[in-house]
Image (tube, rainbow over all chains, first blue to last red; front, side, top):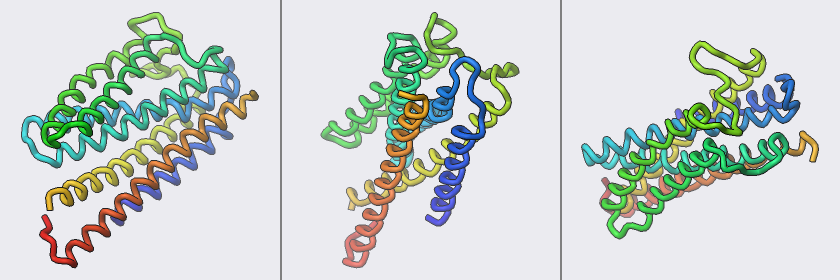
Length: 217
Length: 47
């Protein structure tokens, strides 16, 4: 519990630093102007959602293989967090798109595949919640989660495979198309959201374990 | 709307959503820990 509080405090401090750097210290973009600051709230949500669903996929696979409830607690918790962060990535992307693209939504490959990911994992939570037998619900949710993860590489490469409104990745291995102050602001935000994710996942897994123990007693 | 308002909208939604979620998780965890402590005191079987 003490370690959790320390990680939570670190997340709070990093988020405050990220917000300050993103809102005040980083420069405006040559084309987008001040709107580029929405990037520091949008990209980290998408990044954390990818990480959450990767953890869900691995934990689901391990649960189906070993049938250990601990893996299911991790998968369930990471799914819930992934849905929250994907929802925020969609909302912030829409808010960014309205002034920059002139529309809240476009039937663009990146946007549509991300929305599909969101609904797949909402489906995984529903399948789990609606099942009469919790064990069966956990197994079905694990299967949906593993299949759903196939959408993540499709999302990532959608800006390369399709002609999209969404901009391509600003930094890939060995190629950074971003000014150093902007890159620094984005890295601080990514770190802050990653630490926040670790904190929230620890809380959620702890809660899942206690709830399971309570149901069993 | 001015750029500042769009930016405030995006940061506001992210901040409020994550703060609400984190506080709700902390409250649920505290309640679950309290319930477990009560059941242990009452002699309920624990795992």
